[in-house]
Image (cartoon, rainbow, N blue to C red; front, side):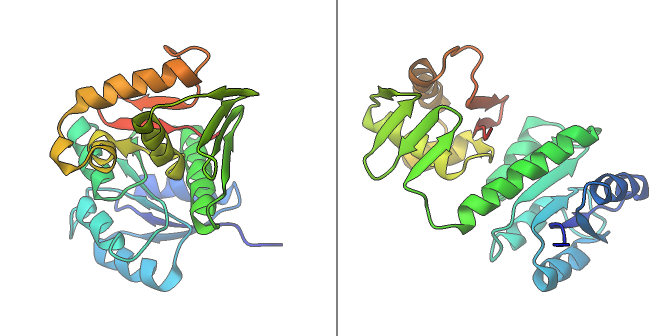
Length: 230
């Protein structure tokens, strides 16, 4: 049998490690556990895991610094699992390079769903960029710069298209307000979140059947946006 994806668990709480070990093992994942940042960096380098689950409250180094060090060379998805539930903690971790953030306590189902999304995102990133992105009825043809919902072509302004393309390239990943603003409008606009609200609202009006209850362009409250993979 093909071995399952390898998950590096960086967590110093024994009861959380037991929960993660049992949950992941029962769903076919291989698990490597470490309790310190130094062990984590060493294991990540030698084993190259498919996904990293990272607690921020480590005994020897803050988890956000671990994210930054991993992102100096690594592209594997990093999912932060932390008791720190404040918006600024989530934003700092995501801006440092984490792909997702789960606040303790969380359920097994939600954790497994986030891991599946992270693995799909990794698969898309590893493959040559596909000329056509699809998520359900949403289709984005990068070569022709065309966007469709079902058979209906949707006409976007240049800024709307640039914003959508950035979300498409990072599909499944939480993109913070700062990251989106810097990459679409430039670093000088990193604090102007009203731009983002206006253009996300316009995109939803054009792409979503129910803009107030979006299917694809979902909000991460206080943090940013995610293009949801189905």
